[in-house]
Length: 120
Image (cartoon, rainbow, N blue to C red; front, side, top):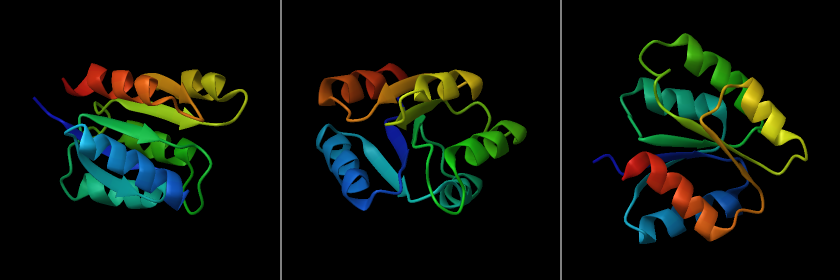
């Protein structure tokens, strides 16, 4: 059972809250503030069960990250759940062929159910 989660989020408060909540639920959490940092972690050997991906970030957006991830044969199989507050982000998640989508603000029950789907 892989209970590792990579949270890619540029808002430090939300990133910390998501990480703390998931850790309290027994998950091992890695954090990245943008897509380039997330790619570095993954290419460095991190293999989470799921990636929670914000779309609007500096340096490398969620769209750019997902494009790079899908081009990498080692990383493309890791499920990605888009986590966004944009009104039409569900469309972006579908366009990115993400494995799931969660609207911000994130109800904790929804977050937990989403992560459990990939980790347990």
